[in-house]
Length: 60
Image: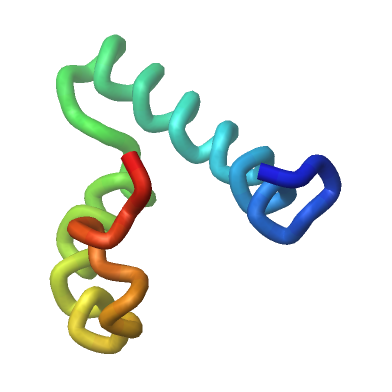
């Protein structure tokens, strides 16, 4: 990751989303509303993603 790149900015902005949902899971046992919506709508939006963006193509 290149500092200051679009990817770096997106990763920084997603930290709040992740922290909010982890906190909600710890306190209530379920994710925040935003996390539940991502879980529900994720499969729908993956149909519109490019083939190169598929999880099996991630360099992990």
